[in-house]
Image (cartoon, rainbow, N blue to C red; front, side, top):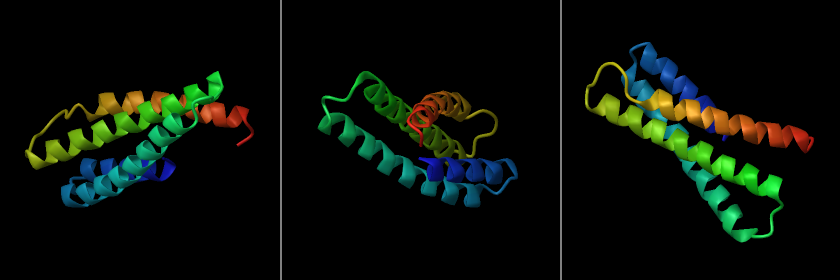
Amino acid sequence: ANNGISYYNNAMSYYNAGSELTALAGFGQAMAVFDSTYSDALSMQSSYINLTGEYASAVSNLISATRNYKNSVDAMVNHIGNGSYGSSGANTYSSSAYSYMQSVYSFLRSQGR
């Protein structure tokens, strides 16, 4: 997920600088990572039914984070594709995703990772 977040942040920087085509390429890279992470997390959730509470919570938070990042990317791509100006709604999704990822990072730190 970290690579996806880096791609997403870079794409937003390009978008904010007015380089929409470069931003779209970055959003595409971010989406590829988020799709893969989301799929892996869903698989983990369904494959490991007996996860303890904190592990299950971390996986659930990862699913929520990547889902929100995917929604944010979709919002930005649609926003650019429509030639819109102003707010795309992406910030709401990315803020939520950030919050979920902080919970995942906290769990990983507690596990010494």
